[in-house]
Image (tube, rainbow, N blue to C red; front, side, top):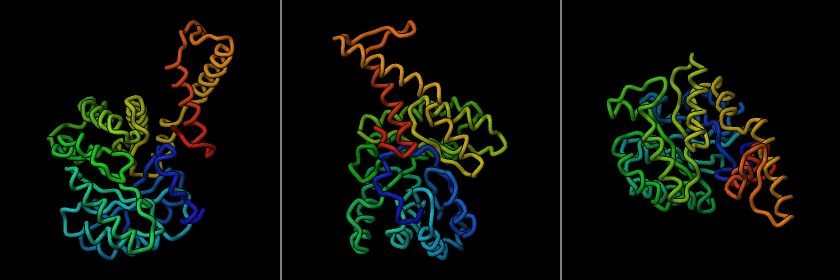
Length: 305
């Protein structure tokens, strides 16, 4: 798959289960990451890139994104409040990237400013308006205090993301293995997203790379709370995350039985049935249809709804 053959319509139309960070200043690692099995790769100009290398790394990222890749390609720029954010966007927005990841977003106006800036670069480079996605990460107390306003900002943003590492630092919260201290903030992100018509949000990274069981538990926990995927920091985390955010074979089989049984019931003028002792009506059927749509979209057949 070439960079240009990654469909722009894929963003927001299929679930983004795994989004893998790769340091933009390491050309070989970036290029390798873009050929792995993550749904999206984020080449990083922010935390993983030393200050002295940030400007030179912009060209490295542009070169990497122009090469063949098998996934959606994002670039995490530096915050607009820094000396680098504006220049990052001007340098990397172009036909070979799919989106900009904007860290430490704290207001709706900041998101609108980024949206406006990207639109001007799109126009200058001959791209249709809205070509480039904008994925904001909320990772400060101020950002979460403004989550509803950010979610309703009316920009090109399709979904939000959670950054727990900086958030727990900002809040002076101890980030425990069971993550119970993050439940409220995760829920607020899911609620704000749904209430404002955005796609389900992306969950935070799991920083303990030696704890695969903890990663799996965190991913399943986030999926159960309404997230569509999870940020990750190592290729070994991708498969675990993809599994957690994909319907299991048992879930798919259950959904198929529900849909087929209800279709037969409707043909007999019934809108409520029992199957294996469970009461089935329209909300259960819609849930089953969602499972099947998600499974189909993961396999590349039809969009998820």
